[in-house]
Length: 207
Image (tube, rainbow, N blue to C red; front, side, top):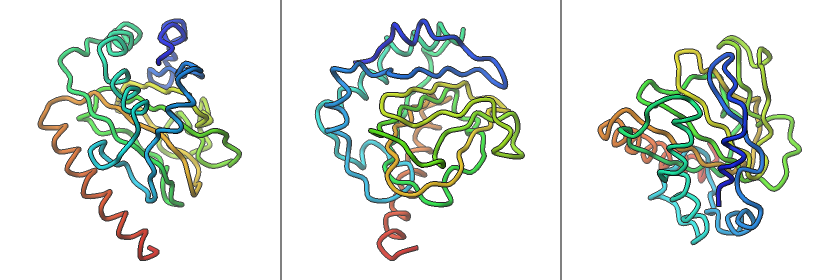
């Protein structure tokens, strides 16, 4: 389901931090089925896989993204040993006005993998920006439209600033991380699960 050949051929950007962008990373014959099988998500936040119900093709895609073939391709591209790190995946389906603020990923994350699943994207907001610093969304080196099948992988560093301008409504993505330990993975799962439940309640009462 993954276009590893395109990933292997894509240039590794090194400024302001190591990252790769690949359009059409999901093979065309697989993408339509994954879009049909993507979980229905009605509230904001990053949701652990155990909290959603996707179809067979969505589940198969997650297996390939978390699998060894892609892990080894990432390790080679970034010249980084990844075999020892556990993997964790969360899903997003809805964005709120306050989402997308500038941030770097947690130090317990080693690599971040983002894949988008939006048939089309016309909003000016919601476009991921790779930032030069943490001061402004306008200081970006690349802006990535979250269209279906687009992949972004970046190494988690002290300066891996990223974010997007505000948008609301449906914005489908998965995020997979290699994390430093099973303990870190467990902590992230608990926090995401609690956050998802709180956001679900907030969405029901209009907060």
